[in-house]
Length: 457
Image 1: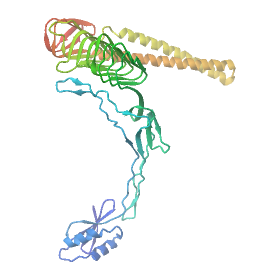
Image 2: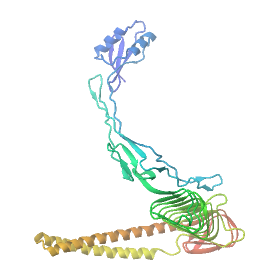
Image 3: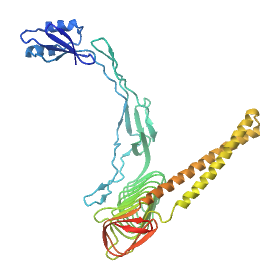
């Protein structure tokens, strides 16, 4: 606040932006009146925005040596940016709940709210324009202008003619991630899946609210499979994750193949291949191959029998049992990927040389066409362009394959087996091809490879 004027025992000051005027009375023996204050304000050109109530209270209470707000000019009113109001929960926590004993509750895992066809999903609220202000110096105070937002990107929805309302195009699951609204088609089975209902083959997500019984095949080429009930000796194939809120008793014939992760309370006599993690509270006599980790959690998080392999970590509370059932664990890679990586590098070099020859030829034919547009040269140019596109795709595919190999090698470099409580004898462990057999009961261990040896910490 700045003191600008002293008028007849009154100090008149202004806020930094000159939109507020204050009066301080300094003579306690003088009997000031409203007219005195208004006249003083008039002398400094403050004649609008007078707050008479504040002046009257100041006089009535005889406020001395304290600035009192007595006038306000037209302040700027800032605009508001447009915004989207989402009518569904965009922050759904699909992670499983950790119980007191360290085990995992999968009962709500994988739940994403469903929407009906035509259901309103989003309302867009347009921007609000601002209003400029004017201070007591007569200067224009510019207000912030509200900005409108672009349409939401994504798929599976329709938009009203005024671009303000978004509706689900079909029944499914609505998610908003990475600034994209997506309604994914979902197949919901309210009861059991059995031989009487037949196999299920659906490209997107499948949610089975009952059980999956022996002998059936459930396949989702592009989506995930979620089963609320129990799973017997059947086959599940998913492009993404498989979530079993209870567990699976495979009876030696159960199979799960997943392009993502696989989770469930327990797996017994099941074969699982997952590109991501495999998580459970118990794994018994099963054959598990995970592209990342195998995590068996909880106070009784146990692995008994079978073969378990992961390209990075294997973690469990207990491995094996007192009966010394043979249990095989393998972390990391059983063979070096360097030969494959070297082969891919050679393939890339050859493809790049081929691309260079095509590019040189394309440059030559383009120069010839500039002089004479022969039809045969035009056809040759089209062939070379197609060959160039194919060669570029070939190189990109090789680069992607090299990256996957490097990622696998990176995971293998971190490979280890962790046991929080007990590992029993007759457990065979292997890390990056280095093998050992546990011959005595051991507790709280971490097994890693050191060169050609395994180190038990």
